[in-house]
Image 1 (cartoon, rainbow, N blue to C red):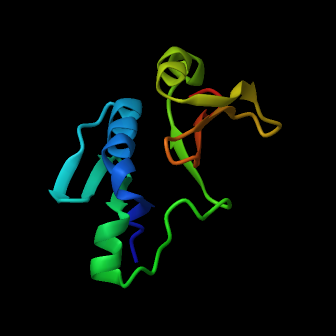
Image 2: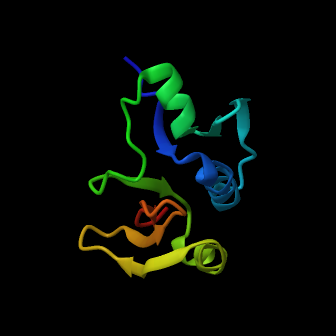
Length: 125
């Protein structure tokens, strides 16, 4: 088995804003495969983004947008502090770059849908 992607489902009016946010954050151009569905294809995993409308149409509404408070999307970078200025221009910074007890340097952002995004770097990376 291979882990392939994480999908975020958003309300239709937030779809473009959410795709744009992750494209600008990662620096990766989104791949739009259908109206209401796009992907940010990163090394190791893909972040898929769907509108509520497409989920209701093809998955019977199995996922409810903006309802999960137990998920954190995490992106590893070489240096968290180097991304602070860009992150501040894109999103609310919930936690400034902080060194965690296990050594990672971590910054928390809130995406346009309110989900928490952890940008981190490992020690000596």
